[in-house]
Length: 80
Image (cartoon, rainbow, N blue to C red; front, side, top):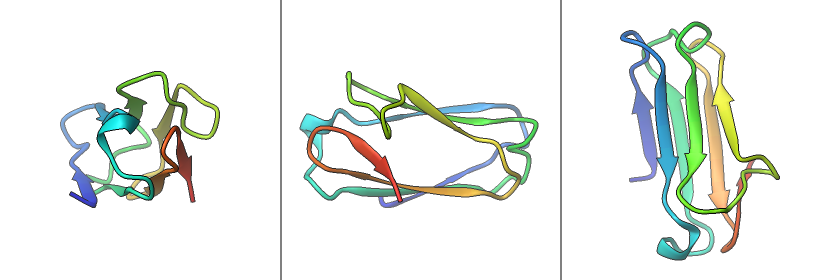
C-alpha cells in the first residue's frame, strides 16, 4: 500500500488519503497516472480528515503519466 497506480482512461478519479490518525508518521504514498490521461481526466487527491496537503485541502495530478509523492508528518500531508 505504498504505490497507487491509477487508470485515468475512463474518467477523472478521486483518491482520499487516510486520516492522519490512522497512519504512522512517515507514511508515504506514490500516486501514478498509469492510464496516461490525467491532463483530461484529472486525479484529485483529498484527505479523509481536516489535514492539509502542503496547506491545501486537495491537490490534482494533471500531467499525463505524471506522479506525485506524498508523506505524512503525523498531522498533515506533504509533497516531496
